[in-house]
Length: 316
Image (cartoon, rainbow, N blue to C red):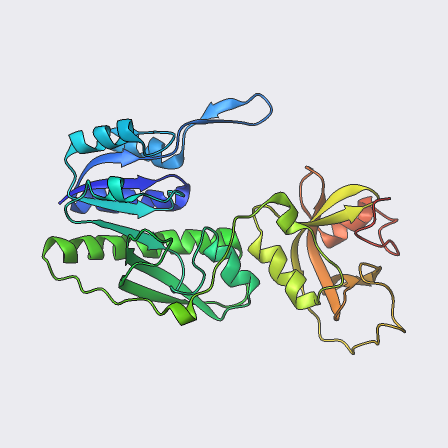
C-alpha cells in the first residue's frame, strides 16, 4: 500500500522505519521546524531527520489546510498511518485516503485517551498498559480497535523508559495492522464508551509537588514526569528536581502530632533522604537543584548541609 506517515517525536521513528521496510511510504507529515534553546536554534523533528535518511518526501504544514490537502493528494496515498503527530484531522483531510487512517496509541484504549497516556498510566499506578492500533475517527482516540498488545508494569518504569519500550513494541504492531488492511482482513472492535478515561497536556506546573499528597503518589510523579516536566519543588527559593524516590514501610504518624508535609526529617543510609508527606515518608534517592546535574542523595547532602530540617515547597 501507499502510506502517508504522520508523526514527530522520537517515539514515532521505529514505526516509520518499519513501515518503510514493509510498505511504500510516499511521504511523511511532521511538525514544522521549531526554535529551541537560548539561541533559538532551529531544530527539525526526529521523524523529519529519519525521513531524510530514508530519502522520503517531507511535508511540514502549520495546519492541514487546503494547501496541505493538495500536497497530500499529489502523493496519491492509500492510507494514513499516525504515530504521535499531535493533531486532529478533519473529515476533508481524512477523505484523501481511500483505505482510511490508523493511529498507534500507547495505552489500552479506551483507557487514557489523549496526548499523555504513558505519563497517565504511571501516575495512576496502573499494573499494566499497552499499545493499541485503532482506526482514525473524528473524535480523539475513539476509533475501532484493530490490534492491541498488553505491557505489564513493574512499578519502576519512568516515562522515558516506557516510551522507548512502547516505541519498540508499537512498530511491528503498526505494520501488522497495515498488512491486514492491505489484505482486506482487518476487523475493528468498537470501544466501550463507559470505560473511557482521558488525560491532558502536561505543563511545567504539572510537575510541582504537593507535599500534602501521599508518598506513593509523589513517588509515581517522579517516574511519570521523568524526563519532562520533572517532579519538582522549592528549596530555599530554588527549583529542586526529585528524580527518583521510594516509599519505605514506616509507622503512620497522626497529622496533628507529626512534622508538616515537606519537612526533611533526616537520612537513612540505605534508603535515602526522608521527607514527610501527607501520607507516609518519601525516601528521595536522586535529586538536583535548578539546571545543575542530578546527584545521588549522599552527594547532594555533602554539598547542601542545611538540607536536613528544611521544609520543601516554601519560597524562602
